Image 1 (cartoon, helix red, strand yellow):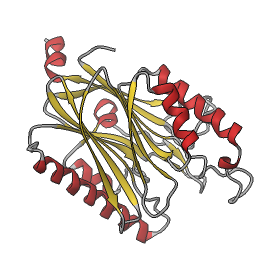
Image 2 (image 1 turned 120 degrees about the horizontal axis):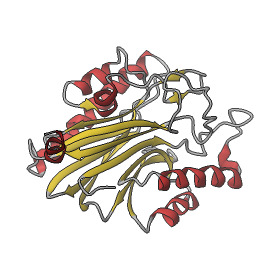
Image 3 (image 1 turned 180 degrees about the horizontal axis):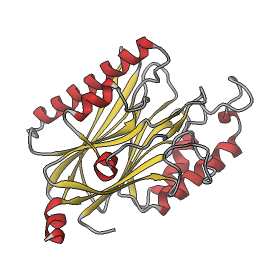
Image 4 (image 1 turned 180 degrees about the vertical axis):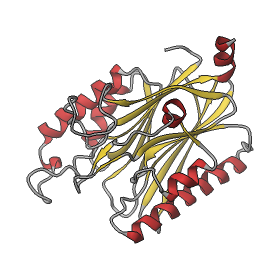
Length: 282
């Protein structure tokens, strides 16, 4: 991977404590061999993609052996940063950073104690002498109209916290921001998506002039496109964006890929320095 590019992947890896088996109360977390096999396959996939940044949701932070599984395979290349959801929730967020591609500057945890116990994770990096803020989020699943309103409140709060971080570190108009995550709603007529599009661009939309119809097969058997990589930058431009597994049907979950690693697909975007892209276009 070229030094003038950044490859970033967002992926909800379906925490074993949430993966239902035969019933609501029969979860994968009770079967160590089962969850280890699935997550080792996820790790192998992530390694094969040769990523610079990995943003994971539903990372099982309440189980040390789960964390150790990822770190034992990824720590030779990546530094890892985590934040666990508040109020005794088992999962949280993880960001893995290729230490040879970036210089780490700072980390900030966004804890929404009173807003659905959701969290956000910001990692402040330096890339080619410029500041880049990588933000990982996972919004509430919209079970009802109250949850739908809650999602918008959560996103507004995260955007305010990002802005406050920029002010505190003198980064207003002087950094790139990439927001990855599971936004837990289809993008059409979604207030959260519309809010983000006022300040950010969706990398997948920029490349394809549309969003993928399906990135998530919900516990309600719904097929929805809920996973995105948004960006705001004066010096980074997406040059490719795709779903993982590669070649999957963006309009349907049940396709020839036979994907079983998660109830989400991953989204992978490669960014390039604008100056380099513009020079290649001349």
